[in-house]
Image (cartoon, rainbow, N blue to C red):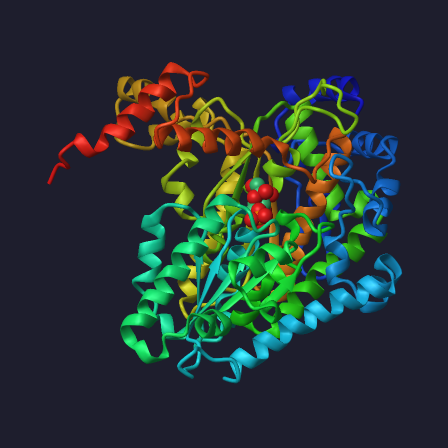
Amino acid sequence: MNIQKLTSLAHSAKMRSIVSLFDQKERVDDFSISTPHLHLDYSKQNITDVELEQLIEIAQGVSLSEEITKQFSGVKINNTEERSVLHTVLRAPQVVKQQILGETLANEVEAAEQQMANVVNNVQNGILTGHTGKRFTDVLAIGIGGSYYGVKVSLSALEHYRDLRLAVHFIANVDGGALEEKLKKLNSETTLVVVISKTFTTQETMLNAKAVKQWMLSCASVEEPKLNNVAAIIEKHWFAVSSNIEAAKEFGINVKHILPMWDWVGGRFSLWSTVGLPLALAIGNDNFNKLKQGAYEMDMHFKSTDFKHNMPVIMALLGIWNRNALEYPTLAILPYAHSLRALPGYLQQTDMESNGKSVSKSGDKLSWLTAPVVFGQEGTNGQHAFMQLMHQSDDIIPTDFIVALKGRSQYTENHKVLVANCFAQSEALMQGKTLQQVKIELEMSDLSADEISLIAPHKTMKGNTPSNTLVMDSLTPETIGSLLALYEHKIFVQGVLWQVNSFDQWGVELGKQLGARILSAIDGAEDDLLSASSQSLIARFRDRSKVTPSV
Ligand code: F6P
């Protein structure tokens, strides 16, 4: 990427106010893009059309179009794992699956989709029941990372589409507190368990699955000893989603209840696969297919639209502009919808686990920075948490606001206030408030001149913070599918420009290795290679039994 060109371009941007760019009357129209389910207003970004053109040239300079074609056609672009990246094919029509995957594999994928749809139908119509013949009332999804976030964000976004006869719960963290909190709410007779793990080796997931299995068997042995047939309980209640079929069978799950996934679908991009089973159980097959349709429509927009009018490409280039030209290290994701409260967490994995790297695909140290630190939470809660910093610290924090024009609840006044706050925050972050403006305002009050000069500096706001506002008509399966696909493609484009492999995650390995060593040290093994700090902490943990708990 021509980083020098970016840096020279940014010089004038750093000297101007975003507000001044609105002297160009048609700015809002020129800096907006609409797709079938989303509208992007990026006019509050600190960028001119000339600068955007330069960014587009940089994208063309790294053969972005060819890279997009390679990804969609199954070239092994995940070069360090020698894998294709084909989550997109999972939401394409069968004929496209056959073109890309070939007849045999396409048929396997279709069979897996059918297997998943049958599970959903048979649970919903009571054909699949627990071992005592009772309908399932709860689904417990055990998984972490990409085997959790995609389903979590979609389920909370589509809460209104949920079959109220079936509640879905998640166990991701290895913390036993989370496990106990869930299990005490569940009835083992009517709980369906789905273990989701592409590798079927992830420590947290395996430990949680074992604990839930013990819980379910112990409940059965108490409630109906005569029926205490372990095999029947596991057979009836347990499903697995994995690419490691052998490990799932070894765990004791009936092979007919194991839904396959493939290594050419990355964990954090796997919602569209059989990983989506808990979501489909909650919202039904039709709505799950509409989610995939919304994503497919974004795929088509992404593949066929010129860069200037291409929503994922423009969002990616704006992110590069803010990160590498204007040198802003973070990105705030602020969904102004309670239903989208899980979106910041989902995007932390999708963005930071994909592009949080500093070595190029060919293994060379990069001379530019890559993924920003992504954070956020639902609006308006953020206004009572971190917006103070965003308005009055010297850090400029580019922001994505996401909002639905139509609310889901009967409380229309509340929704109007929610939307007004979203628009107000994006305006305030851009406009700010100068010392002069503060003084003029305060002069209308009964404060004395001395009091005004004392308080005024504390009331100035820096402004000049760039933001996108993504607007959807309402939260539907199509809009959510489109939204998630938009970010997937934005992150892909940024990976291409940063020249990183967005589809591996070697950075998580060291923590896992040290986790195993520290676990052994806690169990008594000597490990002099650990730091004195870790040794001391391990000793403190080992001696915890000597500490009398405070009441
Ligand atoms: O976070 C590391 C990671 O490998 C993710 O990429 C993945 O989604 C998660 O762990 C869970 O992995 P698995 O689905 O194999 O349990």
